Length: 415
Image 1: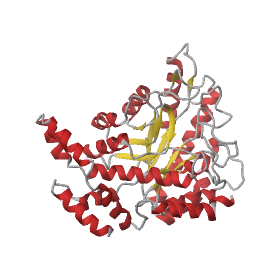
Image 2: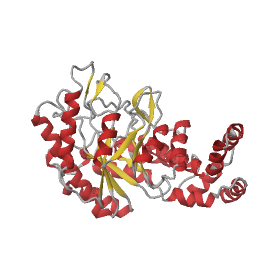
Image 3: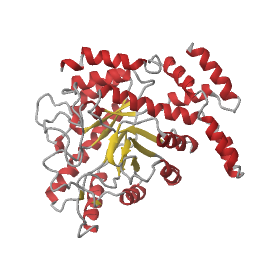
Image 4: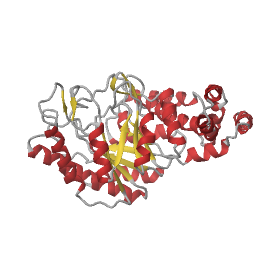
């Protein structure tokens, strides 16, 4: 039945010049960087007691992963329900030290050997992030921009360690590892000095990136933020700061969908960034009012984001990572919903007659353009999605939810 419906959909799309087989081939090549921290509420394995420093995870649903083994098992469950081969995105707090206390500025590749083994066995890649939050050395809400050199140096050393770990990932797994730096630094109230913290951040970054790494194995990115809890009035690492820093230093810039004003859309920024940058990184989330990382939904902005990537011919230039955390629902379900929705949105974009739509715009046929876009909303996209899932041996439609519930009964409920 799935194949029959797909063949019907294939003909319908062919009538408007869209090759569904080609769309599926292109989607199969896209690796989503699936964030590990949805599985344990960004707790990590250090024992500091959960996320802090402006990061809050709400809810207390049963079954949170408590150990590396539990987290890896949960990721395996997610991978069974998501089409394709992807990457896993780690924070440094997920080091596997076997009970040894290792400070963040002393982390080494050996502390992530189990993750590399995990990835190799499953044909996955690994991305990485220094963790500049949830730690006693986040002093007065500041890290790389702190006035105290000792504080800055600690975090500089940590970021240098992490770049070498990312290099290790890339070398071992045969695909570049994205090493992304984000910091929580900022002030709740209007600061007396905006320039000083930003100058210190720039100097800290200069020192971090002065360390040589093999660019075949690691790609550096920097991530901005507009505001958040505790930094409502001023964020040191703003959009303008990092966009300029990345451009001047030949680094990748990362846009997080939750790190902008609620009235801004990241989809509108993609084409501008790609005109001036070879590559771009994304953290895909579903912001609600403030910097809240809700589970990614198949909504208009996700579709628009995906349309921009496809229309810009940038599927191989945009690194798509997920960044959400929800502890109010089954964590496996949240993972699967968000990841599949990201893939759905990309497929939706790949099934649009983009060249024809561009021509309508250039010829000022705006009525035709509106009509075409509206009609496309009722095209049999879901039949192509079902076929893509079945071809990749994962459940179609809501069939995956039963497996998640069984996993909750057999595994999560016993934790």
